[in-house]
Length: 499
Image (cartoon, one colour):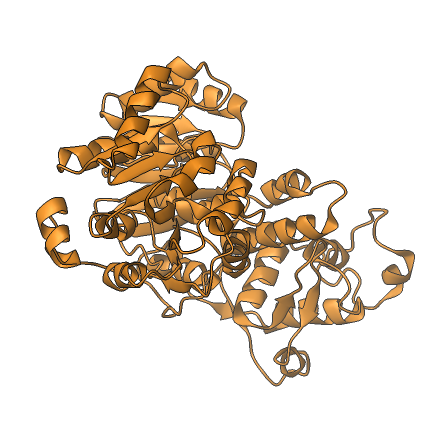
């Protein structure tokens, strides 16, 4: 059968979407491929359809036992011969599946990245290798897993077998790392749109956060949702408080007893409980279509994590919301967590990613455009479905404030980050302000304006292109070509309201 016939007869879909058809054709031509496709975009079909056309076995590398089981159960229900091998199975069951592999009665076999069976693949009739959640192989990815590094030998072991690496989120540096680590040969790179149009992106200040969350949940009284917290303690505490206030919420984190964790997850998936309060340990492979909202109580460490976690809402295509409670204090706290002692190069990348996440949180321009641009996708100035676009904040004359900020950066010779610049503008008496800087005429010209307001102004000026922020472990503020005309009073600057 043709790919389209298989899609229709085996999977019940009438047509391909995104880049599925082109990806499948590349695989059938035995080309390696890197596939970036948003959550619920249909990544699995990109290797499942070719698996039913190739004569041999398709091996799928998957990081989670639950994810393997769900995929295999779904394939079997469609009449497709599939199985998985992992540590949860008794030995006799593993042997039975291996016999089916030897008899070539299986079309798809799911394995964990650390599986001992990967070393035996050169003895099998393998037609295709699919690596799901491929960002896990990269140290730059948001969910690096050391066991994925074992996959780097697959191409050397089976040089003529095409490899397809799939992920929902990977920036350019992560994409390059995936290709290099897996030794993909001149791979076709397919990037589908990252635009989840049904998700409304919302950000609120992280003040009175519990009250804000309760108010949000009451507006979504009948809806199912996920609330992400940074720590296990916060997860347990929030779930308890919500139950005390009448919300049916359960916790989920890696420190819980495995049986209880699984039980809570099953209750959520089966709509027996409406809200799951979780650390980032919850989510990968969760295929629950009717999640109507995702709330982040704390700032994620990077845009990739944020995008993937918010993408667990609205998998059914219906309107959904993603709420982030934002505070600059989170940036300071997370910076200590992302720094890798003794590894300046890795720390620099992680700190830059954190700063990009912080910039997103403080935006006064379209949030969707920022996300799409981050992943290299063009976007209109206004999406009409984020808090900024919906509120359409009326900008006001801010030339004088902009001039103060720009002249302060110039006076500091563009060598300092936003925190130092804000303290300098406010005339801080803190010891960290250098003595020579206290003698500058611009020192303290922004006194009387709060720290948060100055941070918001600086971020707005960055978004408008009047300031650039360097990358690296210690990002500094730089002037741009547009800065000079503002400083000289030849260009007016309009700024968004600073709350």
